Image 1 (cartoon, rainbow, N blue to C red):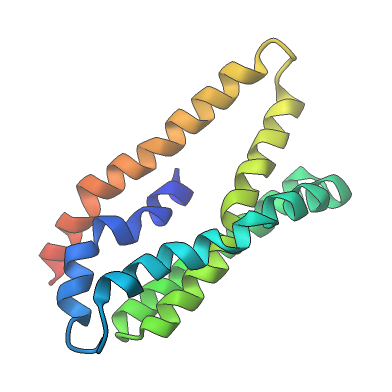
Image 2: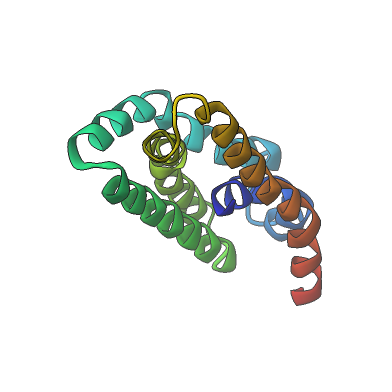
Length: 151
């Protein structure tokens, strides 16, 4: 749930980020904003394959923790970049976040296949994805309100 909350965070904060960075970005803000999603997606063209290999080699639980750590570290760096008004730091945070993002889903599904029988896997994956998407919904509802209050 936290992964999807953080992934969609820039989208929920688009207007607030635009207000904050309109003076510091000499070029089009929307290009820079979209770059936040591009730097996440670019490594994830191949990283889920690499993540699957690492899961096979080192185990689901260890790699799950490593991918979670990368997501946490990336989001912390992204938040620091926003606080210090540094777009480059925010982009670095999104890259680090991307290193763990989609590979975490692979680790989750690998764990589910260990816990559930053949007939239950699809249902358990559906529940997992449904609960994860609650993070996206909560992000859209909560994050802008928190940001406006703390503004």
